[in-house]
Length: 123
Image (tube, rainbow, N blue to C red; front, top):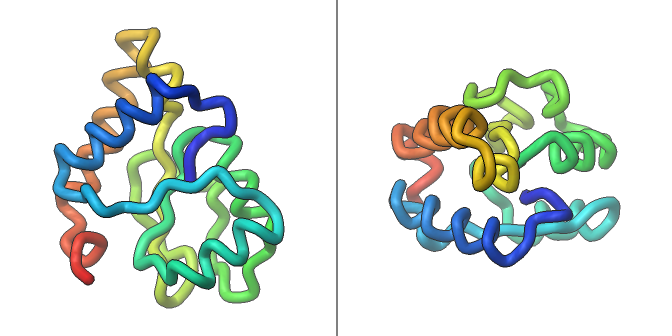
């Protein structure tokens, strides 16, 4: 799930980043509320990634009945069990990473961890 204010440049950067770590077929969504619940139910992801703070709060706001941990309290770049079958990961803002070198380093440091999550890359 990506930040609601992510523009075309941020989405292109995210697409290229996903491709760079072998996740070319990852789904990116902007949903909240009931639409987010339906997206999760229909896609049945192995991993749910919040890019930025707002998506993490949106995910927490759906109060998934099987949620074990909060996206809002997660350490960026650290994978955690969100539900028994879905891992969670919070990444720093990609929009900020496009403008600020320090934000870019923080984003990439966290994002590169996706490369080492083989279960997230299998069908």
